[in-house]
Length: 337
Image 1 (cartoon, rainbow, N blue to C red):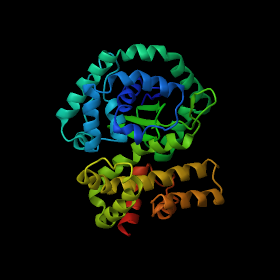
Image 2 (image 1 turned 120 degrees about the vertical axis):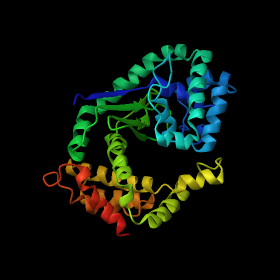
Image 3 (image 1 turned 90 degrees about the vertical axis):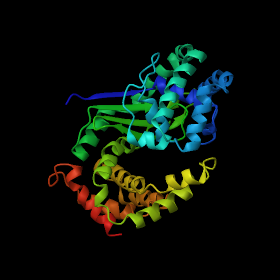
Image 4 (image 1 turned 135 degrees about the horizontal axis):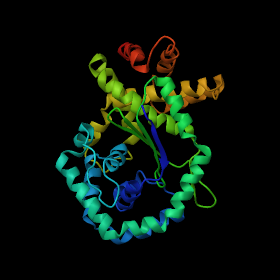
């Protein structure tokens, strides 16, 4: 399979953030620190606070169309200037938005915003900034080596890997389209003295790309999980603690739905433990550092991280052709809770 890999700033995502800066998401998912590029985008966006794309985006946010959903939707669009829906919407995106019609309308309004704001001119004026961000990221991130590590671990492959550099985000996200495209939307490691976002962490990229392998398996084997009530109880407890403050503007019903995603709870355990195993295999984790990471994840609410990690110790590629073949062992663990 021919592999395509990219590490870049994405024009569709920067257009999205221009809209998001005028919504309630600026207080949730956008970094607090002001630096020159952020201030330029804020100034550019201010004139379009009442634009119909901003209004609809706020409605989607209040419906719970947040975090990875916002970014995932953007990469379903064709590149500017056309900005049409180029890839079929996934069932998950439609469910989180409420209807496919609202996402079709959002597509049209994003295109309108792009034209009305002359966003292309803003993009061109900042093209040297984007070039420097990408060039600097490539000094620290060897994407092909990261992909080799991930594919070797899972025994599975994708045709296309895209690491999108998020210049303003407080968080990183993972997403996949079908079984061929994997995305990692990554937040900056830091903003350097020159006001340039830096991306030095391999962990976040491995973490987010791993979701493209793990999440589909959880979906595929969903009916084999027998302890849903217990997992749901744990997921609700963890998610209420982690995001109730962040999602304060959402309705109670939407928050309850967000809290009750037991599959996300399972996936985060598996992906976090996978990153630890990969780091350990590469010689980056000794026993003391491993213990600190396990305690960190436990404090974050991944209460079964030790058990999942210990289960992954039995994942031997000499014995299992791929992670899919091993996955029943993980189900067995969660069914035993």
